[in-house]
Image (cartoon, rainbow, N blue to C red):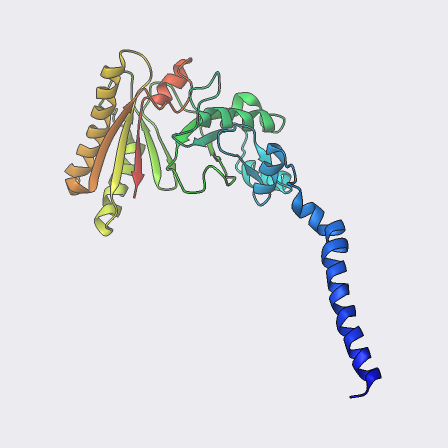
Amino acid sequence: MNTKVLLLSVFTVFYFLGTQWFYSNKLSGACCGAVAAEEVAVTEAAAAIIAGASLPLGFKWMNADPILGQNFEAYKTNSILKGMKEDNVLQITGQYYKGEKAPEGYDNMGLARAAAIRDLIKESVPIERIDISSRLIDDNSGMETAAFAGTTFNWMEALKKETTTIVEVENESTIYFPFNSSVKDKNEEVDNYLQKLSERLKQTQEKVSITGHTDNVGEEAANMSLGFNRAESIKNILVAKGIEVDRISVDSKGELQPATTNETDDGRYRNRRTVLRIN
């Protein structure tokens, strides 16, 4: 190899190494490294929007303020308002986790979320035709970091006070009870539901959990007992229809988990209930 070729090879190597060093320490630092070196400040609100971008409507842990996705208006039209008739009622059920603190003025976070959505859509649905309630849901591993739906919607006929009624949503149903009673009134709708449920259970290995609830009238201990008796009364009906007793679990929350406000007669009526969940 002659001297010129050797010098050219050495120059090429040093040129290449120098170029790499310049890019890494100068250009890269100017366009990208500086950004990586500095922690980008993202506000809590912005983070919530980013996390919930895939949802048309969602919430974040410990927060009752709704996060609206880009397709919220389409979701409102095609899903929320779809079942609206001349005189039916939209039930908005706010979901919440056990560890979420109730905002001031609400019995739980679920009611606060339902109220926020009610205010959001009151221009489309008259507020007197919106009913809010709440539901405690099971914890999951991402609940404190990921955005979640937080609400369900159900169009229904207006509930009549002091009559036993049933509301079904997916694999969960709610049966309402008269004041201070653990015995349901004779009601064809409820009777038919329990008959169909027993027939279903005979064909599957599913289990049922029944939780009794009350309004806040009376002593807490008495209400806990009343809630348990309500759950037991529904359990006994299913057992009488041939369902094995070990497939049915009962519990009571008494007055501790209201579905809605206890400040009105209608609210107290809807808190006197049992909730059946098919597992």
